[in-house]
Image (cartoon, rainbow, N blue to C red; front, top):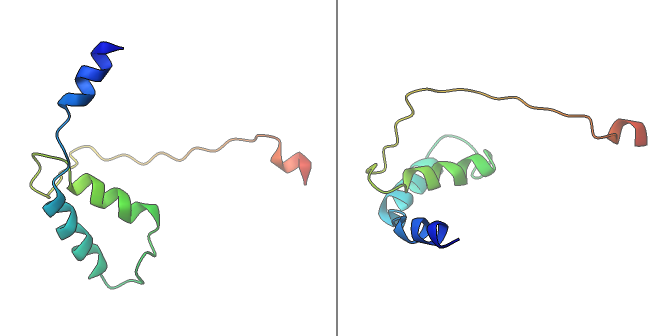
Length: 76
């Protein structure tokens, strides 16, 4: 457990300025505020990753679609 705590302490704090800039950019897009739901918050967090300068680059993109049947259909 000590190794995990050491790793967690070594993670730098998010770049708050980059996060603010990202939020302003998202809010300025031609769309209703908050219409992208959780995706907007995730974009702000990604922009705040230290060392990226607010411009995260994703080299390999992928889209995963997952679904499951947990018996909800049977319950009506």
